[in-house]
Length: 452
Image (cartoon, rainbow, N blue to C red):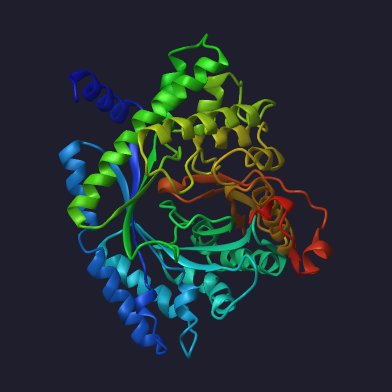
């Protein structure tokens, strides 16, 4: 039953605490668009996306007006394009990127994710072609996001793919250097990538998903921080309960929006991803939640434990609010998108090594990390390998979104604008991992993967 108190509380959360629906993402299968003629395949892709998603933006705007809930982005995710490209006699995957951009322009969405390849156990037809095309595809388009899954707990880590992605990320930064190296900001390298993730840049529509589905990503770091700050003397157990209750409220709002969008569009409702996704806006920071729990500054000793507490409580609160929880669901720690993280880097408290430790207990991994422009591809690959190992061994999703700032060094900044914010260039270890990376092969899956 809706009462005045609940309504007023939600209004306050939206106005004062940065509560929003970060995205409604329509997942669209392109498997029925496969054709040996790439031009025919591209036309099928365009027609299907623009038919299925023609009302997506209008529906999101209508829900915003009807319920007063901000929906920041309307997005589309599609079947990994490497799978569609594999059937084409002439493999020119950039043609698909241009087609996706044309569809994004027609539908008016903020992003389309799915310029992707799943290569955790090796390369199949189309994978190498797509991966090699990523720098050009991201440079030529503005709304396309790309991802590559290089490992899983079941298959191990494809180190040939890891080595290749180090080169691709560096190339992508170089070809977009006149755009603040924006290319790699739209590229994620995963281990254990979920098939129903609504968040960019890692969203794609997995082959096990329905033909079309609506997924919702909620976000409320400011709401959680405000709730915690009301109880400055609470015990750790009480803090966990406060976070759970707050996550419950935020997730219920996501459930409402997802159900309504599903009904209006005539598309099945998939999942609510209840991740705490920060923005550069004041008060919308995961780092500030950790500081509200009791840390003087994010990155100091105790940060990993506080983040583990936060992540667990968010998940527990969310699953009680919806039977459709999925995606990533937890707390994101992207440096450039989080005002508190940026402050912690700039004052010398938060370092890359500490961020890596934090990724063992949070939703994703090293997200929106800006590194010096002279970083070697092998070092990028080694950072990816470290993150993939954390994901593989702990049976969780990890990812790397690393941006080499071409021509810049530690202490300088890349300015992306919008939700991507600004990224301070972080220091890296300069000792070479090249021999390790260049060995190639596959890191075997851990023993706990043998569950059949």
